[in-house]
Image (cartoon, rainbow, N blue to C red; front, side, top):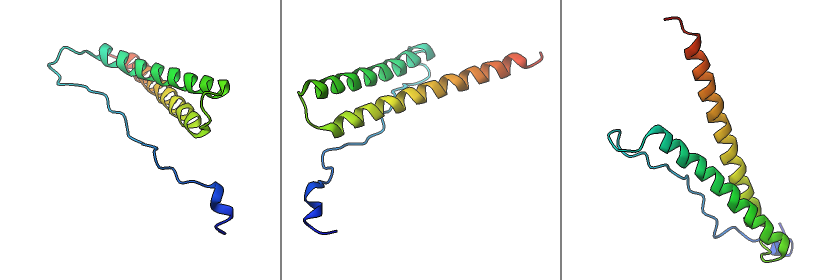
Length: 102
């Protein structure tokens, strides 16, 4: 590509892509499955709130970086999709167990 055409393109320098881990602790710790599930749902909710806030800031003109807005929207969307798929798998497993004969 011609250097003149590449003038508008800038490499992404400050984007950090890190998988977010959930602290599970040891099995003997006091956190239960419901606590773990609550933390995971809270994380998805927080991602949705951050996405909404960055979108509102962009619309209000407080920020001009559309990349950050799109990245936060994608993070929120992927988090929500993963939560829905985990829910679907849990329901599927429950249905499979309920069909078992004792």
